[in-house]
Length: 157
Image 1 (cartoon, helix red, strand yellow):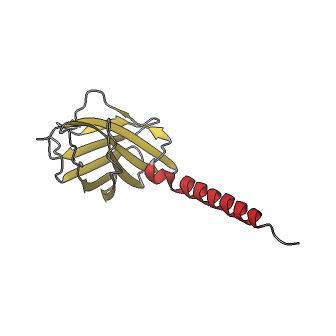
Image 2 (tube, rainbow, N blue to C red; image 1 turned 90 degrees about the horizontal axis):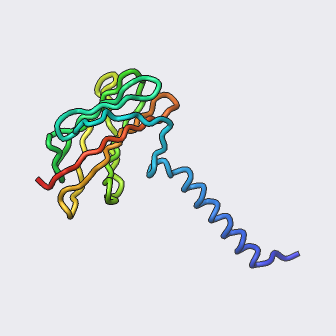
Image 3 (cartoon, one colour; image 1 turned 180 degrees about the vertical axis):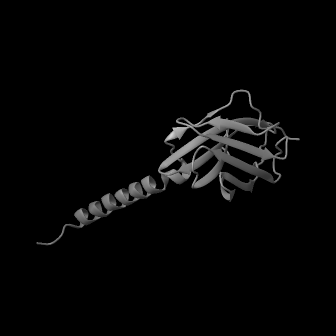
């Protein structure tokens, strides 16, 4: 019994769609990292002036510091994250425009001491000058992924 050509084409299309779906599912955490717990930032803290902290549900704390201050556009930035009360296997910083998509800007931070992570990044240029940003610290602690979103505004100066 000969194989119908349209059956082969249909089967190839279904297989391709399944492969694309599986690849999208597998790689989606790289673009949109999911978190198991969301840490709550301290109200009123201003990353433009000081380090800011966030309480992790169930215990622990994340502290983020970005220098120099005020945080400039298009200049190298030093990032330091301190984690207390939790073991952190890896830490990343995700910088995203709060009101405008600025693409993926995620930096893996290197462990410099127990509970301390550091790295370098920069804010992409924004054509409007001043802009609202979200700096999300993402840490892996055991089998949990914990995120802590910090908000700040940058200016063109």
